Image (cartoon, one colour):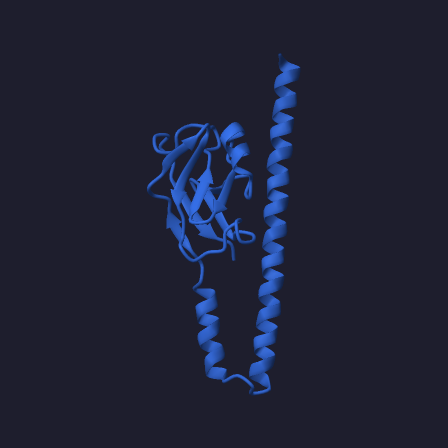
Amino acid sequence: MTIAASAQSANEKRAVLRAIKLFCADQRQSLLVSLYVFGLVGGLAWRREVARRALVIWTRAFLRARFSKKLRGIAPDSGFCFRAPGPRRAISDQEGVSMLIVLEDETPLSAPHTPHNEIRRLGRGRYSHWGRYIYFSSTDNTDPRKNGRSYKLVQRV
């Protein structure tokens, strides 16, 4: 009994560490792309190909572009999966790679971009942004409408 429990906790720890590594890799990639874009726009402004005033406006818009919204209208899908309406103008996993993160009580869910059948079958904090909807499960496979936790959607920086 003890050996099986310790093996299960070790597998859970590995899964959490894998999720953290993926999250950090995504953050690093987003930062590098942001720095590259700022370098391009800064070079254009330096050569006066773009008005410097416009650069200030673009920078403000870029820095304020963070998206944060409490998930409302959560409805059961099937299995452990629930769905909630997402933002209208955001790239989802259907068109590319979603930049949205689902937070459960301010903690990111562990497995983004998961196929919907896996969310329905396994649950445990998996989620996907597909089209206009967020498909997700709570970390302990309870009903997110009744478990007392808050669910929030934020955009990666």
